[in-house]
Amino acid sequence: MKQAIVARTDLGMGTGKLAAQVAHASLSAYEDADSRTRTAWKGEGQKKVVLKGSGEDQLFELADRAEREGLPNAVIRDAGHTQLDPGTATTVAIGPGEDEVVDRVTGDLSLY
Image 1 (cartoon, rainbow, N blue to C red):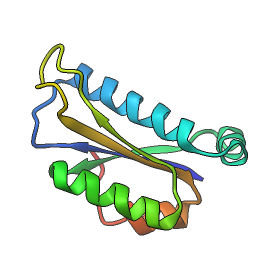
Image 2: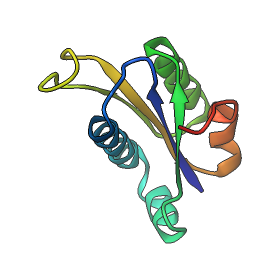
Image 3: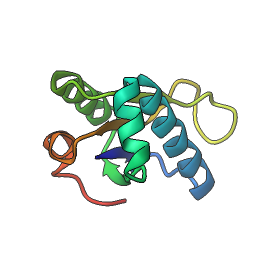
């Protein structure tokens, strides 16, 4: 099992901002998963990959594809306290889920 977090490359987020947004996405999608999925993923080491996304439209497209696959997912919008305007969509997390199912949604993206 794994989780894929897709972060926008077009925003120029600093390293700390990127790390925080990825963490928000990971936790939010984890909370969207059922208890059986959460337990299984935790038991397998909580594998994650961070991938490059091109923009806001892509994040929402990926979230829609994840929904169709039955995968937990979460799009994160920034609060706007530091680098970004309030409501800016920064990341989407897909899964946790079976590797093959997550790859059907995110398999064509590059590592961040």
